[in-house]
Length: 322
Image 1 (cartoon, rainbow, N blue to C red):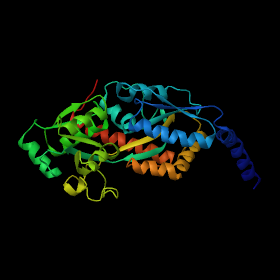
Image 2 (cartoon, rainbow, N blue to C red; image 1 turned 30 degrees about the vertical axis):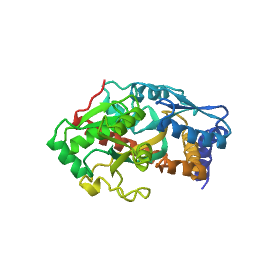
Image 3 (cartoon, rainbow, N blue to C red; image 1 turned 90 degrees about the vertical axis):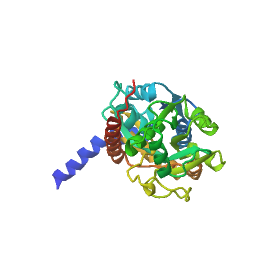
Image 4 (cartoon, rainbow, N blue to C red; image 1 turned 90 degrees about the horizontal axis):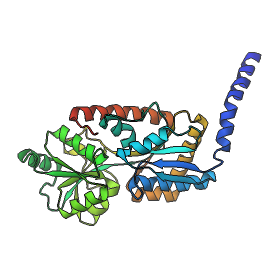
């Protein structure tokens, strides 16, 4: 009995500094590195959560945009930051699953150099086409592409972005020859898609569906397991013969490896509280993004699975960026 009591006291003494640090944290502004330019979907999510969490913890969450090199610059800056709980990365499927497989030289290890916190939101991928494009379904599109190899084009916001990889995976799965047209951002890509300069785009629902609602584009398929409640008339890829096409963008938080576990768990708790806030829930709904909240250990396992899955697909498709 005495030995058990002494063990409990010793454990409490070991855990006390971390718990105390989490209770005191933060005592100064917290930096949130966003490896994208201002104004895009990633930046918007960073500011939504940063504002809400900052209000709760009593210190500002300062968004620092560090774009460039397909997210590598900002991600490396976060990985090399002091693990003191005052730097986080607005991570994503790109930073932790796509970029490590796409680039020959990646200046960080997506698992070893980071402490996973949680997923903020998940945005489903939709296949949208120009209004004049003759295909009305995935089956139609595959038939057209196979009859006219290299003729039809798909746009993206740049090499290595989720729309680019999503299109390459579609090509690999369907045996079609589509021409990738990269742009300097999703906005110009969508503008040319609407204008008819390109034929299609594998984009997030948040970005593309407003143009579908306005009648400027047509949606053919969505990459969710079941029809999305916000788009009940839009069939899934699975319904149209591609059950394994499940490429959806996730947005998340990581801290530098070595960040105190108590602070990681505190940040996870603050994200959960933000997700319960009615204004954040409504904002995510308008962005057609599903809320996250996965616990840190579960999220870490999820990231490893995603990195393995997309790494294999990217290698099979022969996609490589410099």
